[in-house]
Amino acid sequence: MTSTTDRLFSAADTALRTLFATPRASQACPTLPEGPSALSDAEKQQSAGLMRVNHVGEVCAQALYTAQALATSNPALRAHYTAACIEETDHLAWTAQRLQELGARPSLLNPLWYAGAFGLGLVAGRLGDAISLGFVVETETQVGAHLNSHLQALPAGDHASRAIVAQMRDDELRHADTARSAGAATLPAPVQAAMRAMAKVMTTVAQRV
Image (cartoon, rainbow, N blue to C red):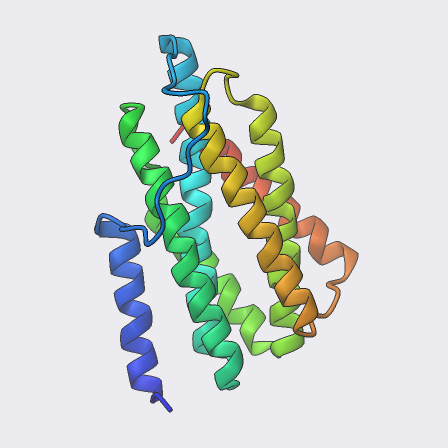
């Protein structure tokens, strides 16, 4: 059983790797059979803004799962959060790679997004395992809907981005189903609404900054 000090060092390591290292995926980046994407400058700019938002979402996912793993006293749940965090690293790597291909940069506010998400994860984790899992369900459900909207908004010819977003959506909804099966509580409607409002602010700002 790992000590609190070990978990703190692990959390700090995850933060540094997320914000300052090049993420490495354990799974190959998804592709679509349509072939390489041929985009105009305007389409590249549109895709870059959307993929920047998705990259921020994955930065936040690293923070949330790391904080929730740190907060829980349940070893099995801690292992669940740690495994989910590792899987989200694939998404982080794919979105970072796609931004580079589009000639775009990640959000300049990533340290701020990470800190905010980490704080939310700690609060959720301290409220008990059922609430913490409920936070996962609501977060991942909202993310799945958000990714569906991006599939509508991405240029039709951006096959590379669309393949990544489609796989991410499926994975996030699976995370929600897994958390629900593990005993997640349903969050109150005002909390759900507040989470949607915070996500709206983040996505609006991150698309540009």
